[in-house]
Every structure is written in C-alpha cells, then in structure tokens.
Length: 171
Ligand SMILES: *[C@@H]1O[C@H](CO)[C@@H](O)[C@H](O)[C@H]1NC(C)=O
Ligand SMILES: *[C@@H]1O[C@H](CO)[C@@H](O)[C@H](O)[C@H]1NC(C)=O
Ligand SMILES: *[C@@H]1O[C@H](CO)[C@@H](O)[C@H](O)[C@H]1NC(C)=O
Ligand SMILES: *[C@@H]1O[C@H](CO)[C@@H](O)[C@H](O)[C@H]1NC(C)=O
Image: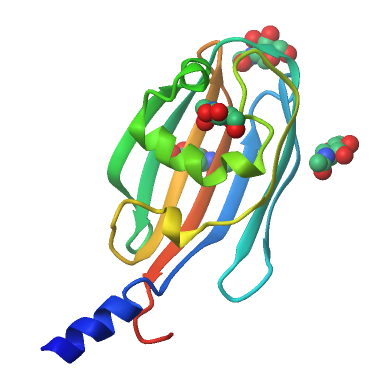
C-alpha cells in the first residue's frame, strides 16, 4: 500500500546507535598506560567515548585482533573476526572492516598517522553516527573487542559495547 511505503521511507532511518559500555585494560604498563577510559551520556541518543593513554616507547610493529560479539544471554561470537596490521593499515586502508570502524572515529582521535606510535593516544568526544553505519545488522547489543599487540605481544584491550535499535515507533 502506498501509504505504508511512504511511512517506512520516512521513518526507516530513525535508529538508535550508541555506546553502552567501554572497558580498557593494559597488560604491560611499562609500554602502554591508560589514564582515562570512559563513556558519558550527553543526551538520550548520544553517548560520548573518551580514551586517553600513553605509549611509553616507540612502536613500529602493531596489530589488533578484532572480534564482534552479540548479546544473547551473555555475549556470543557474531560474524566477524579480523586481524589488522595497524602500521600497514595506516599507510593504506587495506581492510574493509577496519576501514568501516576507523571511519567512525578517525575525526575524534590523534592516531590517524603512520607508525611509529609513541606518546599520548587520545580519543575525545567520539559518538556513533547512525548515518555512517553502512552495514545493515539486526537490532541488539554488540561488543567490539579489540586486543592490541606490539611486537606480537598482547599489550592492552579496548572492548566497547553498543546498542543498535531500529526505532520505528518513535520519530
Ligand atoms: C575483551 O574481550 C576479550 C574477548 O575478545 C576478552 O578475552 C578480554 O578479557 C576482554 N578484556 C577486558 C579488559 O575485559
Ligand atoms: C613490556 O614492555 C616492554 C617495554 O616497556 C617490552 O620491552 C616488553 O617486551 C613488554 N613485555 C611484554 C610481555 O609484552
Ligand atoms: C591525558 O592524560 C594525561 C595524564 O593524566 C594528561 O596529562 C593529559 O592532559 C590528558 N590528555 C587529554 C587530552 O585529556
Ligand atoms: C588520515 O587523515 C588524512 C587527512 O584527513 C586522510 O587523507 C587520510 O586518508 C587519513 N588516513 C586514514 C588511514 O584514514
């Protein structure tokens, strides 16, 4: 029916896409130290993420292991798992999933440069913009776990959870 079609076209983009939890942990504080790792709700739809850490010695070899989990009575592995060479990615964004994730936050961080990495690593005021999410996925709560390795050794985790809700009733 034409009326229904117009209704969906108008409201189909009313989605909630926001952070729900953020956990950081360093496993080698002589190389990577966290000072801040925090979410802050600034409105009903918007939660900002702030992260502040320091790399204490230059890093020329870094990779991250990314995994996505979906909450279904506890977080269950969901779809994607990816290993990304961070130094190579910063020279050329060769991995499409990493490109998608990095595209969400590159404007909020100072890590948009090539290796070596050293000193302050900051993400400030990062919030999720539904319009930047190009993958259609089912409503629910997800966790993106990123485990960071320097010289092939695990240094720290940044695990972030977010909710994605197609909020058709609202709007
Ligand atoms: C982050 O998630 C991983 C699962 O990929 C888990 O093994 C690890 O313990 C989590 N780290 C923290 C600090 O919660
Ligand atoms: C911890 O960091 C130091 C640099 O401060 C490095 O030399 C060492 O290999 C790291 N150890 C592990 C287990 O990652
Ligand atoms: C990050 O933390 C360090 C150490 O506490 C502090 O000196 C610095 O100002 C912080 N940077 C930002 C951008 O918050
Ligand atoms: C980093 O930022 C510059 C300038 O905004 C941009 O040209 C470049 O593509 C960015 N790098 C990545 C890996 O996104």
